Image (cartoon, rainbow, N blue to C red; front, side):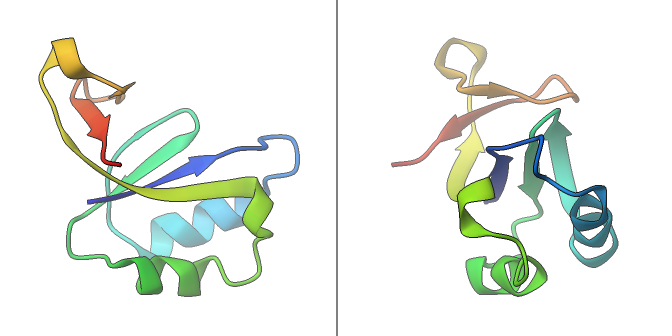
Length: 84
């Protein structure tokens, strides 16, 4: 599944977050990370972010993981590991 990490919260616009929530199915999240439903591919996510400067976010793959191998703890309590 894909994750979007917000790298610069100061320059990030609430409208972009709103558009993400209205357009894409967000499976889980943290303060600065959106984890998308598996059905969303990179190209679809990038279309939603078309006017967002690329230096404000990072888009990457991740998977559910056991707590001992956790890179990100989501608000739901689920652990996720970044895929390289």
